[in-house]
Length: 297
Image (tube, rainbow, N blue to C red; front, side, top):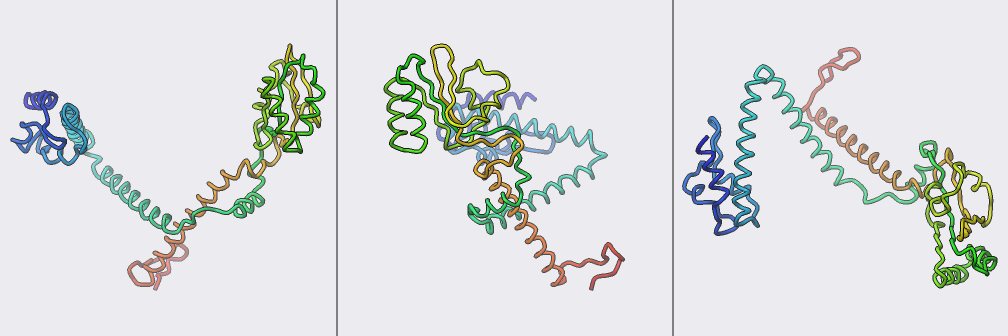
């Protein structure tokens, strides 16, 4: 144990002359540490050391590497003693894990070779139309606008007319935006994206009642006064909880579903191919089927 302590202390203070140099005590003796019959060699540490490590960092790397190596070896020894009776089970689990890793690498190889770059909008729409029951909303979504301005603004009626016109005219929308910027009014435009109804309500006064569903039943621009502020708002689209979600909301989710399906198809097709080829060539053989024990030719 004293030797180990000396090694760790030396690694902590030893200087390096280049990014791949090791302390002199490591260079002079090829064995750095030992646990039972297991030995840690200098070249193992050199191979593991990053190329850009030097100076104190390299000494710290060596110390940490040796510490971890010692712990790993001692834990393995302890496991051998504690679970010697389970050695066959451990070997089996290790082999199963190895097989699982190799199979995943093979699957990934063929997926990368055959997976199409992307799915078209038609692919996504076709899946959506076939599986609409899978996309039921658990919350209400809306599109709309909120305009907050000073309640004392004298041209509020003109402002409402501007907002109404801006719904269908780009020039009117630009004019409305300029008016808001000039007077310090806040215009929140959520007409191009679906947002949760509860999120939309955060732009309106907090004094709203718990049940705000009645706001969705009205058409056109609505008005709410709160203190010295006035709010104009409207909903251009509403999709209520319990209805089928709009395609644009679930399109990315559908894309992921299609990718997963395509991946499974590629893997299954490859598995069927290698089984068929192996049996046809005689490399593999099924001696009895599950139905009646008939030997396969």
